[in-house]
Image (cartoon, rainbow, N blue to C red; front, side):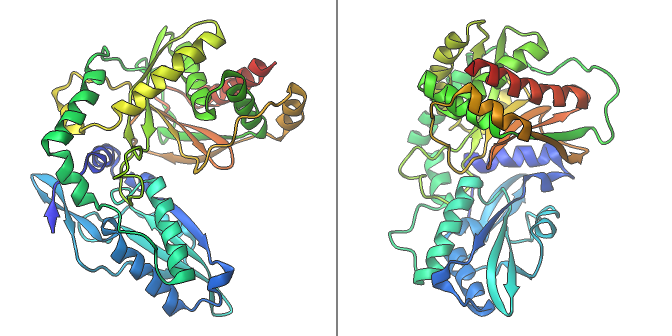
Length: 398
């Protein structure tokens, strides 16, 4: 079966095209420790469970066709590539062939002939991180029970057809109005000098103290740790760029609707978050709550609507990739001070191409990274940004 791309697939395809040949950047990995109830697990039974997973979720047996524009080709059957004994990095490193390769690579880790871990590497055209989590839960159920209870969730082709319906177009139009009301702006538009080689780098800060500060501020201001982080990042971007009003694109999972909640598909898209940078921290958080809700609503849109050039593209993103968000708690400054010496900073990634100039990622356990184009934010400034973010939030708890 053939059909149009969903909005989420269009969004990630645009990012892929701007990032090639470094589009392996968008591959991601989920690892399943084989449950005790499924052991001992033979290679044959592990492969059968993966094949059952692919049968359940059409996204995992979908490739791209091209007729001027890309479209999805959904096959009735697929045999994902099995890489026995391969390390996750080995599976994740090569970019996918979107026309010829199935969008799932599988590694089987064995010990004494028994499969102990199953490594799933996803093509981002097939699904996003939360969709990968759904696939992982379904695979666990297939191993433990031999089946997944409940009805099949909608498939990407179903969603694509709804999105081009009159109802879907109305949803897209409502989201477009929010984007079109914002004056176009690029947040990082002042090249400071010669870039590093290669120009794209990632600085990663692992900070238990920052985790505690986020939870403490979320508790104090009655919001989520994600909103606290987004607000703090926006304020610091304003300082770095010298702007009193900041525009950032948070990546939103778009699983608020009942028909998308359990889908294995690429649903995540950019929303539009704008914030006037007030000096008072409490005022920032009061303004950030409604702004975040507007951003979440604006993320469910048709990227084709952005082709007219009037939509803002700040080239600055925020992606909270945590599978679950820790509860806000009341943490004392003393507890945070004890954790602060445990912070470490590393440089885990560098490459030539990226679809934006600046992106903050948050992952489990609490790591905050900045991936940036050093033509617009040099490596020393990237490191300074992360350390300033940590110190600002820790000081805010005081």
